[in-house]
Image (cartoon, rainbow over all chains, first blue to last red; front, side):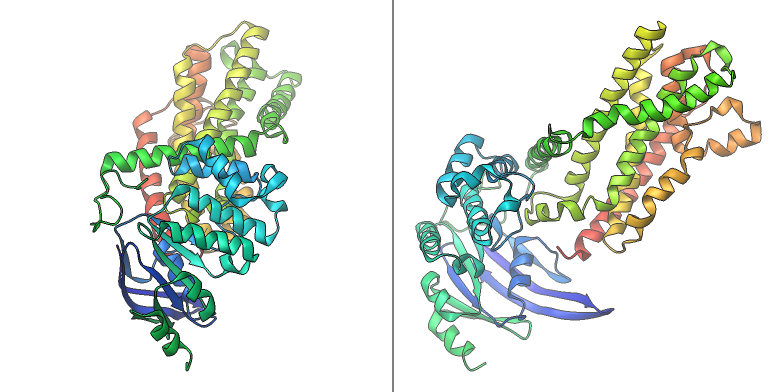
Length: 215
Length: 275
């Protein structure tokens, strides 16, 4: 379970604190796949970063009763100067996973071919996304934080992501942020809308989409 | 596999597990171990000459000063070999400088690592500085060996060489923590740190021994903790051939204070930083 307690985040913009999130309250349980809708700039990425612990909230706190992935999307979480395989070794060591198996798993999942043994800085946008996603699957978190960027890649890989997430649905929670309702329909069962710094939960994804549309 | 040992099976209701000290220590060991391995390959890998510089710089700088003194005919009291005196005297500074100078970019160049909640800035700094300490200590061992073979003088108390370097590392690490925390707020540190470490070279203790100075100046320089580290290293190498003055507990207290403030500053910086 993940619980957000009056979560707030403000950034300093031109010397003034500009609030992005304020008083976000929510609870996410294992097995839930929640689609979080929000327009560009609504604070979707910020919310994921706070839940992941990449950045710290200005107020409130995040209670994590399960292991939470880093925000999956384009980039972050890896080293660009070393190869994909070395990234897999590094992640395995950080999270206490068997190294050889992890390297193999990521190789098979990310399908980078020869590039797997090349520095990550030579990778394309899509390849980085695939590597990042494969790395997180290798760690096997209880909760995955997914940015829409994952699904934006090639459709074959998007389908694989969907399958991988689907396969984990029973035990893992998935929080998927997007500004495109159709993407959420592929992944999620319930929904939430992020607007004006606040998060509103809906038991039904369609309700969330309906509430989002007029906005 | 659950991050916290003893976590309930999947699907069942989960309570937040209190992270025991032992589990936390295990995670930190894992993380620092992984960071060390990575740092080792990126800094001292075959493709760059990082390790060569470890030997070149002390040899060049210490060697040049030693040579000037040698040529000017000014010997050192106690019959101490000039060249080895200056080379060994430069190495603790070399450690100090490389730890402190790398601090302003420590966070920026490892920012992507902070995507992993398990990795803290302290882990990153510890891994970098421990590796730096080990590398410079290794270089020192090579110089000590070379000096021994060339002049027949071996360290009087090798343990003190290590002690002096370890204390220097702790001081530098504490200062490094403060600088890296500061670098989250302003680019000033990136601009001035290199200059300040070079300008402070004369007062850090690399180029003088305490007993060379007048009494009142001695009292002043002994406030500078790094001065003690150089004295300890010199006693380790030359023993009673040179009179040394130092206070290990004073250096430890300074290191503890610097590290304490460094940790507090990092904690604040981590909250405020935009990754």
